[in-house]
Image (tube, rainbow, N blue to C red; front, top):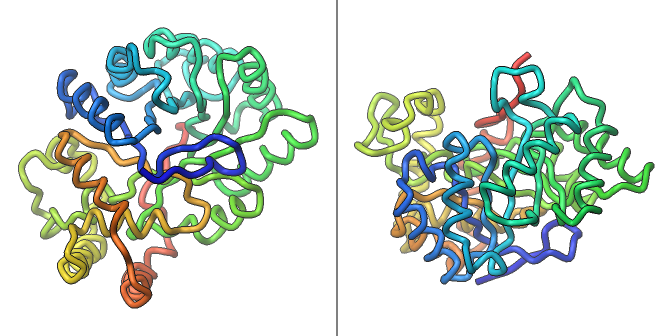
Length: 325
């Protein structure tokens, strides 16, 4: 396994991480626990979840699976997106974050999380309030590092500036949609992260499976795919992205690997990327994703990937999650 620093921190994370959005939803408890154990045995030490995944079931499953193995992993969770209908059941206020952290710790069966992330920017809460609350969590020992998610570049820079001015712990990472099918972070976010020492943690690294070549056209979806189990996902299936998936399949055949592994290998090589979190609903998918670590991409193939994905550097992001207004 390859390990990298998370941003400018001293924390080492595996180049390939495990995303757990499907646990308790598209993968049942037994399968999810098998995936976690296999991933750890293969050297994956970064496990990412959130308080809203599968209506908290993802955290519960991880908590059970990590009993006796908590010290083997860098455990990350998030809070800030909507948890309920109440006025304080979302956002990044001190009130909401402290409650959600305590609840996450109980579900995860641990007394600390290694990386606590704000799931999205909260325009209704002063950043100073959020950052002071996070700083208090670090000082209490319940959180070791803090990160952002779904922050625009200006929002992240404003937060870093406040932390520096007040002498508070600063964000060491940020999560964003990033893949061959979404290179929009390269315009502003990636340069900012390189300058400020913030590690990028891409989500949707395979564009929800589009980059594996499984979708032949906008109206077709293989049985058991995300577009079938989660009908909302169909909005991502544009002809342009599906065509990119077909191109990835051709290049992967030439390289002697799968298109998914090829796409992950490309993403791991991008500046500022610390770890790439990939979800799985079967152990076999983790096995396949691990192959990305050994792929050698020559300059010619890298240039081809650059060319076919260049249109996705501009326009709208593949996905971004914000609080409802």
